[in-house]
Length: 114
Length: 112
Image 1 (tube, rainbow over the protein chains, first blue to last red):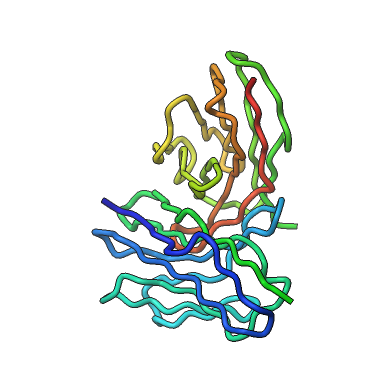
Image 2 (image 1 turned 30 degrees about the vertical axis):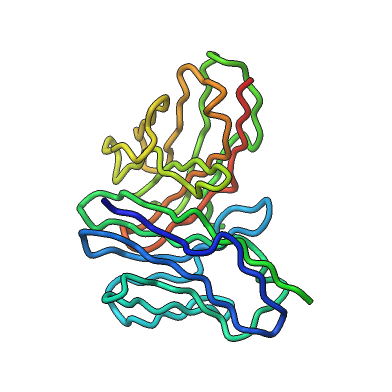
């Protein structure tokens, strides 16, 4: 069965320190992988995507993620957190099976302390 | 401005009263999809469409219907809403399967 697991429901960092949000996936098919961010009472915004090109993907606002097939992981990182990064982050898999079935992780809430 | 527009933003209704949430995109995207968001569960796909007259079930289609008669519109229909359909709903569209979505602003539905 296909699934997406975000390993932490909450992550708390201090401003200026690194951010690591972890995501593991399980898929029988070659997936497309995404990270989205949702600020409070807002819609979702695409941060970055992996679609079988470079395994290290750079996104907006200084975020990047590395696809590791051997570990079935797609962790999101940022070298230095900013207060404006406080939000909920979703790891997403689209199964390339000819359809458009999409699986979201349960989300990781990022808190940034001053 | 390229966008996905959902209406209404907020809706309170009673059990059993049919309702439709509209979704429209102005980007000529082929792919459209509906999701519901519930605390602790992330977003779950209800239905998706890969083109006009082509729709398929996501993970939680029970109690919902969709149609795709035109490329730009993808309404979500609840024929007989129940309280367990109280949720935050998002419509999204994409140019290609692996391009990433553009999301609407959401519709908060309460069924009493």
